[in-house]
Length: 404
Length: 148
Image 1 (cartoon, rainbow over the protein chains, first blue to last red):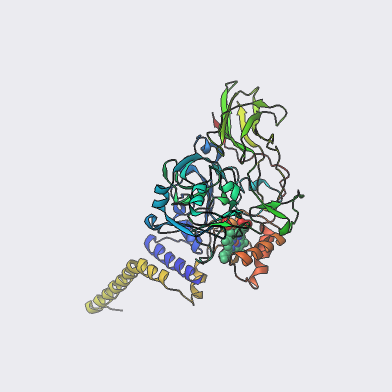
Image 2 (image 1 turned 90 degrees about the horizontal axis):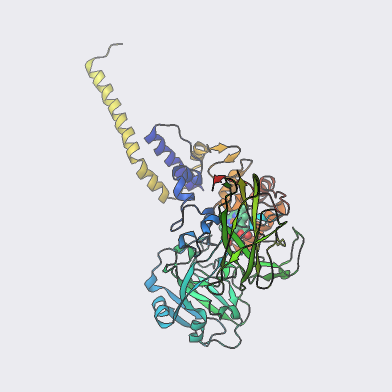
């Protein structure tokens, strides 16, 4: 602190000397933001400038819904969710992936080049959503980054199948879980401390679409999203898809890395009233994400003149399931109109819906979208079951429109 | 008082020297600043007083985004050491909720014992960042209207 203040003081001195003006600076963070207002808060390396930044340290940013209009999410519009500091000075030629744990026959290490040459490569479009997407709407509030709607995206990922690599390593029949370790650094600066180490049950890990990926839409992963190597498990909380991946452990028990236990990425085993204090042993790990949809066009706030019709479109997705239908309502759920819905290009890819609407008379409307999945589950219109950490809010998306 | 030529020259000389000194300080200040960033100072209390003039608007400290109230600087200093203070300002909780969070960070995220400051920080957070009741679903707000 003292040092930071001293810096401020000397900056103050230089600035005052150079400008000959009365300038006041506070602490380090203050002068940083006063002198470089943009670099600090507004621009994330490799990302679209209109992403909403929730937290610049560690970087956490989401995509406003209208920027998610592309069928395949561009890399620069994919949300950023980091728990630690991004690794620096990444040397791709030296990057390795080690696969170990109780349930492998013997530990094995691959270089990135070996992974790319030794195994068949696959490309899938996979939906990645933060478990806390929508947290902002829970009441009483849940702590953490207050995600609104846009911690979700569905780019094309290229890599090798996790199951091909596990087969090459050789796993034992008692394998239960696959956990990951990455190269990000804990916020405290302690390089020994693991930031986050989660994973998935072996069944999910052995699916065709479970990838060890190095590319988004044909290009290297953005540094913010795990360059040079990461896991991708579509339809499950983003935190299962480890970034800056350097180690996998095949476990004979549910993986117990940091953020597997406690309250993180867990919900109560039974429904609770809002605000209930739930003991840790009554919490269970979140697996699939729930059915959800997003209106990506028009952007909220559209003013339409007269009875002109306009297209309403967006995407819908549901964990490991598919979407059967999407409906929209102009009257707060009193009546619903059926949209056209595309087929998924592969499992765990979002689907697209569209419909032409016109507004019956002058005035204010809200367009609500509600998806129904292959299990017949629908999105709720109000906030779903409250949980202590505010996960899994899949309440229907609402946009405001006006006929003028 | 009469000044002869010698005296005037001496005076001018002195003034020039002062100007040179001032210029040297101005020119060197970025370098001095750079040096200061490299050195850890233990005793800079006097300087601290000089720089505490934050920019405040509508009761918000513009640089941190924190609500200005007793001990907000303590909160800013303590709670932005690992992550940005934005992680604090976007959250709301009861005193108990904030206390639980501090305990969680101490048990799992290497947050240190806050000593006597803990109560001051909790006083501040409880008062300024208490939960707001927003019901089962809040109305849409902050809509920017545009022509489609």
